[in-house]
Amino acid sequence: MTDCVERRLLVSMNNLEPLFTEIATLLDQEEGDDDAEQLERTLTDGYAQALTLEAERTSLERQVLRLSLDLDEHGEAMLSEVKELARQLHACDDSCERLRGELVRLKRRHSRAVHATPGWACQTSPDRTA
Image (cartoon, rainbow, N blue to C red; front, side, top):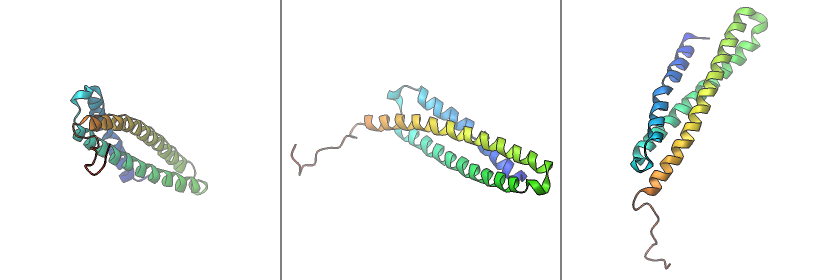
């Protein structure tokens, strides 16, 4: 595996903790204190990070496949690399699953905050009768 790919994955996965902390902080505060815009910014950041993880997962899958097809030619050295990539793939899956779960919770919270905003409800049009 190239050092560049390994570093990119580690950087991406290490960057998740501040996002998880921010999500937890937002979910722990009283719902009446919610700032819908802050919730939306955090959701946007979270979905962007989830897409990055999914792209990294795809890259890891391709590398595992390529290396596993070359195992007969290269033997044990290649097998250890496949195992390491598989470990990283598993960690990436776990991180993505955890992030997606937290984003679902945050999305629900955001939806409640938006609906609680004064003036949010659809007004009856003057052209329509009740």
